[in-house]
Length: 376
Ligand SMILES: Cc1cc2nc3c(=O)[nH]c(=O)nc-3n(C[C@H](O)[C@H](O)[C@H](O)COP(=O)(O)OP(=O)(O)OC[C@H]3O[C@@H](n4cnc5c(N)ncnc54)[C@H](O)[C@@H]3O)c2cc1C
Image 1 (spheres, helix red, strand yellow):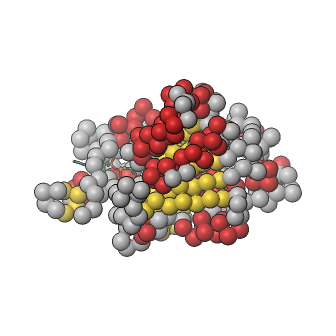
Image 2 (cartoon, rainbow, N blue to C red):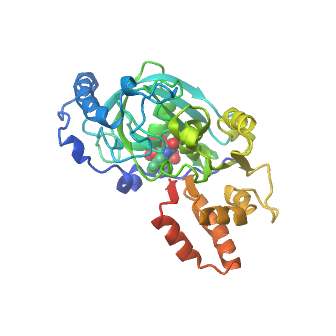
């Protein structure tokens, strides 16, 4: 039986929604704005914002010619002072166009995951580790108000999968509701925004907010730092942005990077693995610089004979991970909220065995900016 996908109301995420950006003032879209009007209004706004961001993310012309992907770098590339942040808000969203949608989970996965590619034409720049907000059309029947923003971690690097700097990929899981009494999915209770995104067609328009978030950014100021990534399901999205930036693109950070990138990926079964071909390509091209460990819960057993979750796989290497963290590695966790206690527990065990105060250790990691968590 598929697991029960419980309700996570958008309001539960409200505290995590982007804060206003003082850089862009308080100009809001007229309240009566409908999609058609929004397109024109947003294009005008985008051109104004582009001028502001132009200083932030240098234009193609300003690119150092020696890098194939150099035209969207900060100067210097690790200086994130002018990170694009909350450029578009719910009252004046950006209108993006769908380029493609593709189901990327296999038939036996626990639910469908889709790769959704949007065009922003270069007018809604972002960097690796940030999220977009999506405003699904329609009204929330519970309060009669327009549907609220849902956040989605961006799954492409700032250059987009097509390397033009004009597209964004999202990795979206359809939220379905399994009714245990009916022993069937209840279509009336399916997730609004995820199903809207997965059902989009090329050419459709989508209202976006953001880009949001500065918790999951890469430590580019220290290219020797190891990057340890723990993802479950669609939590792979930010990790994909990192790995594309490090191993698929010719950027100044990719050339400077001397650390280890280590991905732990937890999924339900083999059909639920995402972007597997990309991880295999990196393993072949960069052995020694990239490590990849899967935890496939229904197909692998942990050391106690139970289902293998991502924290169990990590625990097999907990000593090494602990050492790397002590030496300055950055730890990234993204995906289902339930992964967090298990990971913490594993690290705590190692700390105790070493006679180290775990709470103090974690506090120290957080203070040094080595601990990055985005769970939902
Ligand atoms: C920072 C951040 C990043 C995120 N990144 C991603 C990402 O990369 N990919 C991704 O797929 N998601 C991501 N999410 C989650 C995403 O924002 C949405 O929460 C998710 O897609 C569900 O939204 P929805 O509109 O489809 O479901 P909603 O309509 O908000 O419903 C939520 C859940 O409640 C259930 N439900 C609806 N009605 C009822 C009812 N009457 N009774 C019981 N249950 C009900 C739905 O089936 C669904 O499971 C992220 C969240 C955050 C905070």
